[in-house]
Amino acid sequence: VQLTKRDVVGAAIAILDEYGLGDLTMRRLATSLNVAAGALYWHFPNKQALLAAVADRILEPVSAPSEGAWDEQLTEIATTVRDALLAHRDAAEIVSAAFASRMTTSTVVALFTRSLRAGGISEHDAELAATSLLYYVLGHTIDEQSRIQMDSSGALADSASPLFESPTATDRFTFGLSLFIAGARAMIKA
Amino acid sequence: VQLTKRDVVGAAIAILDEYGLGDLTMRRLATSLNVAAGALYWHFPNKQALLAAVADRILEPVSAPSEGAWDEQLTEIATTVRDALLAHRDAAEIVSAAFASRMTTSTVVALFTRSLRAGGISEHDAELAATSLLYYVLGHTIDEQSRIQMDSSGALADSASPLFESPTATDRFTFGLSLFIAGARAMIKA
DNA sequence: ACCTGAACACCGTTCAAGT
DNA sequence: ACCTGAACACCGTTCAAGT
Image 1 (cartoon, rainbow over the protein chains, first blue to last red):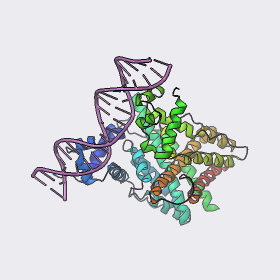
Image 2: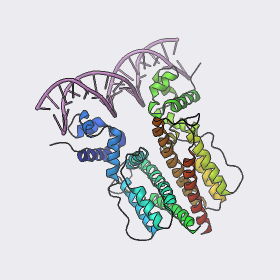
Image 3: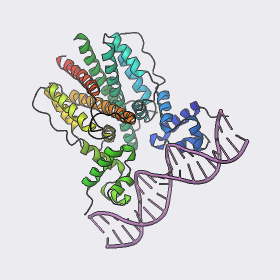
Image 4: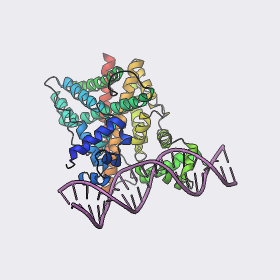
């Protein structure tokens, strides 16, 4: 059978979850697909493009928020994004790089922008605020996820999955999120 | 003469400014110092530690803010950090990685925390807010700096330095910063 | 104490040639 | 159209041996 882009991305995520980004090399990935390394370059122009596809797949579960107040929608989207990132090892770093390289097709910024507009913020300001919020979510989750990696040497006997959400990390995330929303609310009143 | 850590970090920053992070390899760095690659490993245990030292050097110009209102202090610190990052190519990425690896000796979070405390926020909340703000500053500047790199192919005939601050980028930065400060202000009133 | 030379075990990417 | 084999030009890191 033939190799599809979907297969390649799936295998990449499998390596990611089991061994981490440091071990996600083109050669290793090719081996796990029983294929020569060069074969990957027929499907993707380079590693960066492959990682962008991985980032898109990671963000796939993020969808439009449920009906509700704009601030509740922001919270829902941000939480969903964080959950999607925590579901795969080093995902925050990969998605962050994909955004920086502008190779992702993700719509998270658009989702944030729409909810902020619903709150009565101008299109221009909503876009700026949306990217600011994304910086926060990515920054927080990268930090959180790198801490998980460091702690994994100290082998904690906790949940079944190695990728669990620490309750205090969730609290810290929620705190920064509400700080942001309070700022947006203040901007609306002014 | 002998090689000092300071020399190594200085040479690393010189390569950074001229060729970027992608070209900052241990071998290239050693060559620029007229030394064998192995010599670097007498001064630093590994590349990560070297980059952490580079990050510390980049943040050296960041110092305590002048006397004034807490919100003005926050703005001053954040602006100084951004300026320090924009002064060297790919600096935001390096500093971000250094923070994630917890190898930096930088005191920026402490500076942010102190000013927030001066505004009347509890120690606990001030620390959380300080890291949130740092995530924003780093996220924004990484994005901004990666854009500079992409544009440099389109060769813009602008300032003398290739590392200039785009006025609109500064506006965007200030917007997110004031959003954050508005959130902090709302928290104080509550 | 500080550095060299040479090696080890890798990388991403390209490309003629095969099917 | 899709993939292999083999090469090119690199990496970070280690370590005996030198001074």
